[in-house]
Image (cartoon, rainbow, N blue to C red):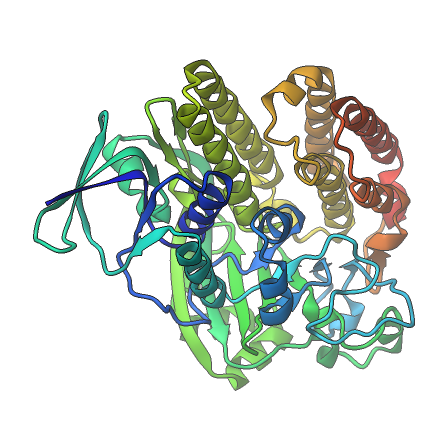
Length: 514
């Protein structure tokens, strides 16, 4: 038996389900089929990474896909990204240099399921399984077909594409105009077309879930630490522990569990040192003794370790009606939680291409393919510049306090501003901001080199903290995305202003750590 669907998405995880939903919402006459090898519902607290959603990915889920009510009711609002730099033996969190949001209005409720105070762009920590189960329901409600426990045996790329599956019969045929690879690291289509190109950035990674909630406020009795912000807020952040050649994430999950992940420079920390849960405790004790004590006292729900090599596809979007979404296309590093942003941008580009195709606008389809390829490659290069060769900086508080502030400022000034005003994926808009793109790229390269050469003026930063809301440049750039700027010329002016703020900030940033 041979069946037909306008679009077939191989892979029913976050990338595949969000794309299916976006396509059905944008092009409701389109037939969309998702092929997923597992069965739903998946466990709510699952082993997948990507539980921390930042401003772009949160906007995509909330505003583009209309999932705001679900996110508010079933996931945790996030109190920003928070970084604790290394200090001496790391036995007291209160003495560690801190960067993150601290200042909030005094009369706002901080109940976990409420939007957080002083934050006009809500972000979320999510249980991936819970989110994907909900996305499945939304897809089916809009008319998308999701075929569970479906094994894809082969794929012939052509016009139309032909897919052989085991659904209904041993060799069922499914023909489609568009095929999308959303299989993640497995890269079903990417590998068959030999698209994957390994990149130079590699980290050793281990991650696991603990059955209990970790509240960093319980790790210190330091009065100054506790006086910086109201109690009960820090745990809602995506908390990062930074050390010599490594960083660790602590993400609270809506189920009450905590996600913990280690990312380390393989030149400084061999994977064999923490590739089993028992070894993690040994590795943590001399570096993060407070976390080691917590980990040893809580039940762990799962454990995974791997050598995470970065990769990029030599092609991601094709006018021949195929594309890659999410980690099937590229992987770099989890610092700053960019994975959801890549999905948001990639899926929006794919949706635009399919819309152009069904409008029989072959010229626009080809143009979008070229533009989207350049845009996604530019994102990859930008994030690669933030990570590659920079793990050696993570144990240097004077440098990292500046770097996380700078990286955050650039993100607000450009990515958040453009995406939340619907112009990040607009090829016409990028034509008129060529000068601004070049200026920002030059400024970014200058700062990358500066951080690598920087020598801190102080030998110790114990107890030094930076409230992100009090860093004028960062806060003004965050607020720059508050206004809805639909007109391209108005948005261009705002971007110009943001770049001027960044230029000024680049000359004064060292004052934060003096």
